[in-house]
Image (cartoon, rainbow, N blue to C red; front, side, top):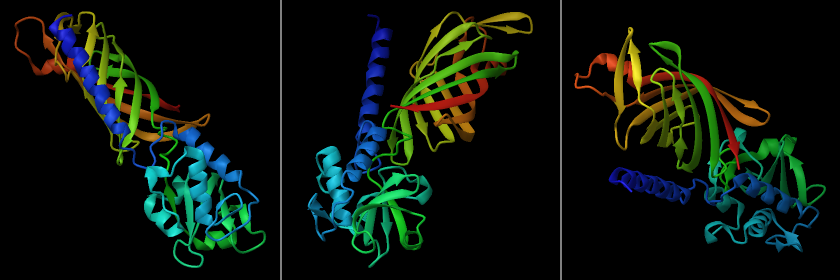
Length: 325
């Protein structure tokens, strides 16, 4: 194996190690590989206790209080309390969970209410505006399913919390995108696609991305393997090494200029902006624009000039879709 190839494989291993470190830094208290399945497990487990009577301090099928239902449900779902230290009171659960706005609620999240005191009652959100909880008063009592829109619960709603990472991130995500590149020499300069494995890191989304592209203007296929970092769902940056297949040549006003791919570990740099997001068949989609810098050097001995930016820079528009697994 050549020194260059060996160095390339070492870089791949470094990138994969970086991703594995991010996995251990999930934003929510409980890290799981497939949050969508984990959330369904939580809701189904909570529903299995419907009809169980209310008993203050109860944590078994003989009787449950509101926080006991949450505690028991997560034990049943994952075999242990998150981080081995999941609280047993509603108020402590509010401090333990990642705080989220009401419009970000997903099945399996927690909803809190000011009843006999601040954050004195907790339930498990089941989706469609409904939640499962152990009620001590009213008709009926015990473990029941209620609506957040009911007058009492709406008036006493206090906040929401997250223990399992959000399902739209799924721990690991596959993102595919397709769009034309725009260059000075042609309206359709190139076609790009991308596959992104990503994890949450604090408020950011970091990942490893493969971005194959066909550059019609240069007559090459590029296979960048880049690190990706998203500030939010609208703005993402990426950079990394690239394997270039073919000999890059670009027509400058009827004269062909030969190039050679260069850049080493950082040969592709770019930014993706998604100003508009929407849903298609239950999946997240977005219109995006990107600006990509692919590093090339002139193959001959002539000095580089500003015109070489035509070879190096590409802009594109397209549509991206997210699938979770």
